[in-house]
Length: 193
Image 1 (cartoon, rainbow, N blue to C red):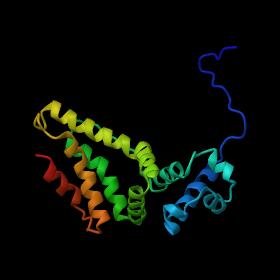
Image 2 (cartoon, helix red, strand yellow):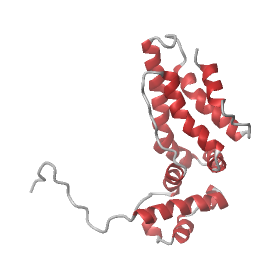
Image 3 (cartoon, rainbow, N blue to C red):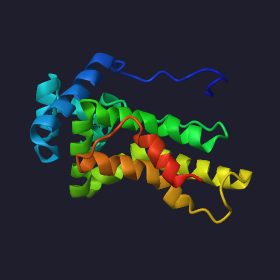
Image 4 (cartoon, rainbow, N blue to C red):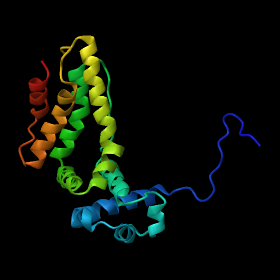
């Protein structure tokens, strides 16, 4: 038997309940906010969400995957990867959501999460794979394209330029420095000619 073009095989079992997914992610963030990463357990999140452990394990292989997804979805750390041909505008569009999040109530949670990533290699690896990696690759792509267009010198340091804006923003957040309205513009004035 072959599947005709356009036919999609039907998966057995009940479809996942989006309300259950949301409850799991909210519970994970709540437990993390109360007890830090070390205090998060699949059992504790399941109890808080009102689901069984198996429900969580069907979605996530481990605690690191659960927490990376909880932060990505719960704090809306989604990929916005513009590529308009204007490096400054693209960097502004990519980095402004991070600035906005760090200035909101979510900033405390994101800062705590960043610190936990330094402490747990599995969490750092999962978050880098699931969230940061796409952005990091895209930032480098934007800088390389700007060099090819002649907007930046041929010998411009791709890695340094690509990492500068997120590094400065995170530096301000981690050290409790003010994240002023014009922080991103100041960073880009410094980094871009």
